[in-house]
Amino acid sequence: MKTILAATDGSTPALKGVLWAAQLARALGHRLELVYVSFPNLLPPHAYPKAAAEIDARETEWANQVLDTAARSVADLNVECVKTRRTGGPAEVLAELAERDDVWGVVIGAVGHSAASRVLLGSITDRLLHICSKPVLVVR
Image 1: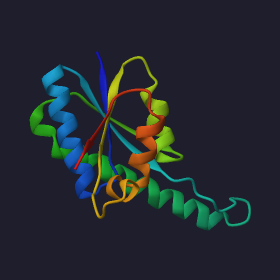
Image 2: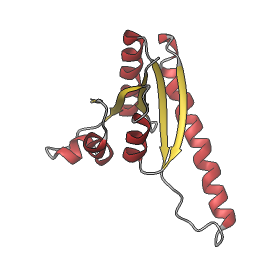
Image 3: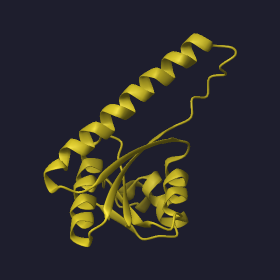
Image 4: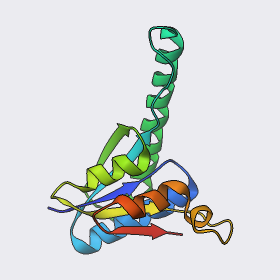
């Protein structure tokens, strides 16, 4: 079974992208994989162990909340849904996940604010469009 990756960060545009991805997955008979990417914690764990542990715990809590909310938002579409959390640069992580043979493509929400492409799409979306080898659907 093919998989459609849906990037989410909990924002309204991301949830709109998740809805489109779920509808596409349903129409094509594919699985939906919700993906949340955390930026790396740059605190040196040996220098600030309590702070680093607290940041990691809060980020895990937030990631789970975002993924659960996204899954609930499309539950009525009855699409098989998998939740994935990774750490790294979001565009790079999404492009790497898209390399899997079972992945059809990636859906990502974007917000437009001005005439400049990077601002229209957002830097993560712009980067993903340039590095992903699979189709990328940008939902606005």
